[in-house]
Amino acid sequence: MPAENIVEVHHLSKSVCQGDHQLSILTGVELVVKPAQTIALIGESGSGKSTLLAILAGLDDGSEGEVHLCGQPLHNMDEEARAVLRAKNVGFVFQSFMLVPTLNALENVELPALLRGENDSASRSQAKALLEQLGLGKRLDHLPAQLSGGEQQRVALARAFNGRPGVLFADEPTGNLDRQTGDRIADLLFSLNRDFATTLILVTHDEQLAARCDRRLRLREGQLWEEA
Image 1 (cartoon, helix red, strand yellow):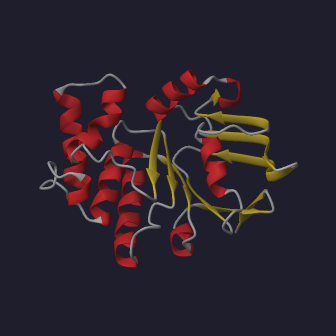
Image 2 (cartoon, one colour):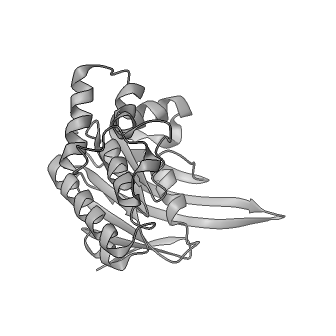
Image 3 (tube, one colour):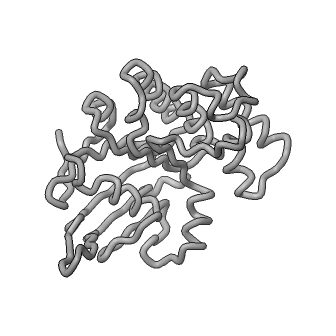
């Protein structure tokens, strides 16, 4: 990735219709994220954290303002162009894992490469190596239902990092896991972040997880505040 800002947000606002009223979720958000930084988005439930994450990733639109991802203006791009940008530069990890239930672990990790049109032995070897790095070398042929929650999240991590994304968005990546398993997943997440110099932007209610990030950004009453 070039040494440009990974994310730039200017004057971002988001409102939605609620009955006869407009409900303001985000107001005048400003944000600059540098390459390889780790960012925690924190705040009360309903404060707009997941909404902001979706807008930064190009999965939702703001009502006003500009959002640049990897140097590209999301606010001026159609969905097809955004999908291409995400396929090349973005990884995702979700609280609910979001694995394809009919695909085994290896096939789930290969999926981003297949969506990019890469279907060769090199891409399969890379997917296998990631799973082995995460301790799942003996679980390649297992379907998600045959894996524990922690194993499923490790598969999701491997899938997210397959293709070496410039930025990884994670929405409550340890939220469905017990503390011990969640801590192991967090260790792996930050280890992969260091190995691949990937920018990490995560939503979390876990103050311990947030404290491990370079920056903690709190959403309160629609505005974003940086904490020391």
